[in-house]
Amino acid sequence: MSWLDDLDDDEESDFDEADIRMRPNPKANRPRTKRRPAHSDAQIARVLGVDRGRYTVLLDEDQPEERTVLAVRARELRKMPIVTGDRARVVGDASGDEGTLARIVGIEERTSLLRRSADDTDQVERVVVANADQMLVVVAAADPEPRPRLVDRYLVAALDAGIRPLLVVTKTDIADPGAFLAHFEGLDLVVFTSGRDEMPLERIGAALEGHATVFVGHSGVGKSTLVNALVPDARRATGHVNVVTGRGRHTSSSTVSLRYRGAGGNGWVIDTPGVRSFGLGHVDPANILRAFTDLAEVAEECPRGCTHLPDAPDCAIVEAVEEGRLGPGGPARLDSLQRLLETFAEKSHKSGA
Image (cartoon, rainbow, N blue to C red; front, side, top):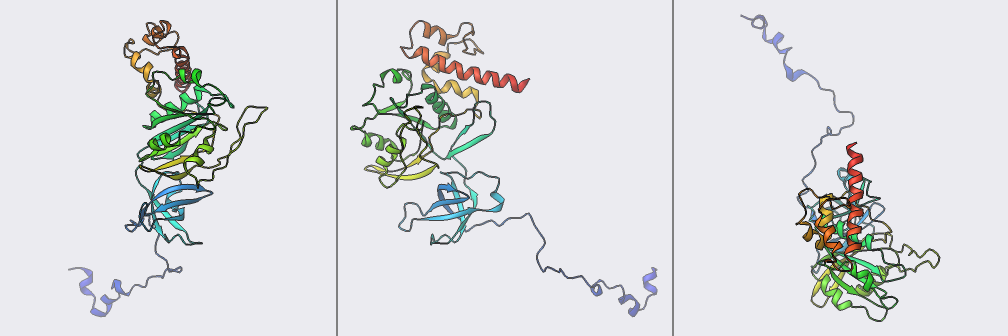
C-alpha cells in the first residue's frame, strides 16, 4: 500500500494537476518555429529585372491576363541570389496595381546559370543570368578594336554553363572583320556580320525565336543599338566610344529580360551591362578545351594527361598548329587556349600550396 492510499479524497485533490495555474504568455503570441508555410497557392513568374531589392516579375506569361508585378524577396531567401531569368514562386498581392507588392517565396530549379568572377583567381562568383539557353556575343570590327581573347572567355563561360554561343560582329562598314574571324575558324559557331546600313535583323531574330538569349559584349560595341533594333520598345540607352581611351562607355546599368516578337515565334532577349573583363574563376578547367572545339578534336590524339602547354611533350595540338593544319587562325587560337590553361594551372598550384 502506498502512502497515497492513506489520503482522503480532499487531501488527494490537492495533488490534482488540473489545479495548477499556468502563467499566461504576456505577449499573447505563438512560440517561434522554424517551420515555413508551404505556399501551395504560389504562382510561377518570370523575373524580368532587379532594381535595389525590388523584382519586376511577369505573371500568367503568354495568357490574356499577363501582367508585370513588383515583388520583394521573403526573409528566408535573403541569402539566395535571385537574378533575371529566374522562375520565381510568388504570393501576396499579385494584381500589379500601383503601390502593391507581391512576395517571392521560392525559386524553381534552374536549367542553366551563367556566372563570372572579377578575375580568374577570384573564387567569389557573380551570377549574370539564369535559365538562358543561348549567348549572343556582340563584338565590333573596330572602334573599339575586337578582343579575341575576351570572346574566348565568353565561349568558355557559355559552354561551362551549357549555353549555345552565337557571335555578331558589328561596324563591319568601318573595318573588315576577316582577320578577327579567322581566329574562330573550325568552331561550331554561328556568325552574323552587321554594318550601319546592313543589319541582318531577320536572320538574327530567327535565331532568337523560341530561346532565351543573353546578350554580352564589351562596352561600345553596339550591343544596346542591336537590342533596340530587335525590340523597338526596349529603349536601352546607347553611348559612344571615347576617342582618347578607345573604350566604350557603360550605358546599360542593369540586366533585363525583353520579349522578342518574331515572325515565326517569340523569344527572350536578356540585355546585360557592357564589361571589359570576364573572369573564369568559377569554371572547371576541364571545360576550357571544350570551348575550342577544333582544338579539342585534335587533342584526342594527345598522350594521356597532356597539358597542351608549350612544354607539353608530343602534344598533338602543338604539332598540328606547327604543320599549318589548323589554318591561319590556329596559332592565335592555340595561344589563347594556352594562356587560359596556364592561368588555371597557376591557380591550382597556389591553392594546393
